[in-house]
Image (cartoon, rainbow, N blue to C red; front, side, top):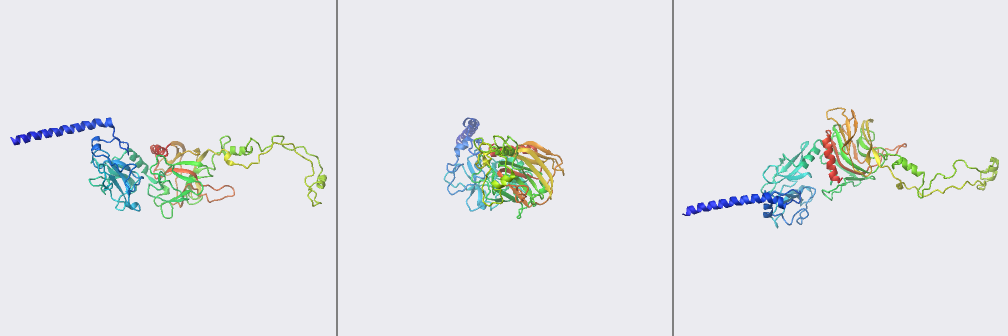
Length: 514
């Protein structure tokens, strides 16, 4: 009798369990659309409201809340994930640093449902122990075990790959796995990395994401990194006085070790001119003034056109004086005016022209001219005149001391506005490929059978400065420093496709708030 009772009771328990599971499944299926539990970090819906209530997020750690004594670096991923395999993003993960330098940094998660315990016990190894850092990081279940792994784009040899430290029961594994299916935004970034020899984002930091360059800023030039991941970046801002950036891939600040000039096939960047300083160069790679230069900038101080705020209009207005509409040219009769007729002999005797007398008698001839309109004697204020609003883009390539190529795109730059420029070879395999210029994603110029950089080493390489800045001439003013801002500067060893340029422009607009 006892055995029969136990069997019946087991069946009851089994049916209760099955019914409970079905209730949970049905509840989960319909509650998501009703309640819409949303992840604060990524705005992606959490998959399980049941576990979200059973294992709540910590109340002492979150996007704007941190444990006292924990130093979070917000340049890296900072948001909710699921490392406990509850199908709910209840674990707050971020990069922390509890030491004096980058070597002590590690990635840690404050697990949901563990209030009043350590917020960093679930963590990765430190940088000193082998953790690879990348600011292009994210969370993704790369191995399909239901846990979000810590992933980022890292350099693997000469290329870049999405790799992850898998989440385990006790923390993140030190051995990395390749992510076979990264999120769409990471796939876009991976396409940006492909073939990049130089990538200076200038978003919220000042360093080279291609990991090839040494940067030497002048005049305290730097991107404001005190606001990580801003909604709108200002890029790298140059003051036009003493700001420029020198770059190189070796200790002598030359290019030719990792960044091969002869391999340059495309250059892409955003630029904003606050002022058209004389012959300003956005970049100039060379071996001096007029020696092996590859440079892009403007011609003169902008476009001169009467009535358009140009230099010619400015010169026209100079002749009209300042204030009250007074002109410096006479409003009455012009040319020779009637005077008292006096012979030369009389003038010699009656005026200061008398060389036989040593006392100055002053003007003795009554020759008062007709009354004229008064002239404005106020000092000339250039700021009161409209200066050029546009400038032509110039792109040149020199071989030794000979200019081999000069491309001009009229009116490419507008003062005070962000403009995207891409200069790319049309084909990779051609020795003399067509050179195509895109302005804001639109084809603006094609140079058939164009030239590529011919030298293997460049010693004077600048952003915001011309190699002619120190060269003076009695016939022309020297080139001036660039005044404005640069964002997302890249140099590729492969041509840029139209799709890549379109993605680059779209990505830049989102970061610049355009």
